[in-house]
Amino acid sequence: MVKEIKDTEYKSIIKDNKKVVIDCYANWCGPCKMLAPVVDALSEELKDIVFCKVNVDEAEVITGEYEIMSIPTLLIFEDGILKEKVVGLKSKSELEEIIK
Figure 1 (cartoon, one colour):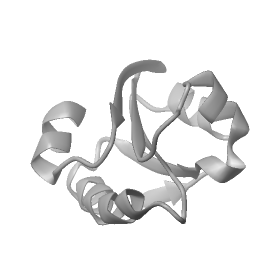
Figure 2: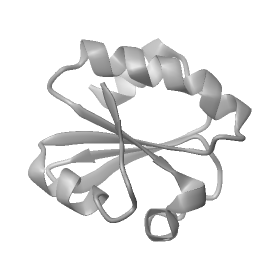
Figure 3: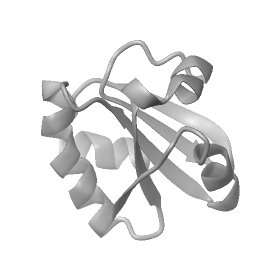
């Protein structure tokens, strides 16, 4: 399950979990809407990874800190460190390879 988080929550989430994927999206973004079911499916399959999403229109801190200029963007953290930043729409198999 993908948990909707606020800008103020992400630091504790990435600190408290081994692997975290944050989907940075906006409600008005077409590619974000197409990516959402893919992220949902991966969250159901990859139970050892925490999946979250944050609305960039309400998240100035995370968008500034990680220089999110295009959406959708996935931020992949491992042990509290940003390991990968994936920009744009990707297939489920592509994302699975990147995330694992």
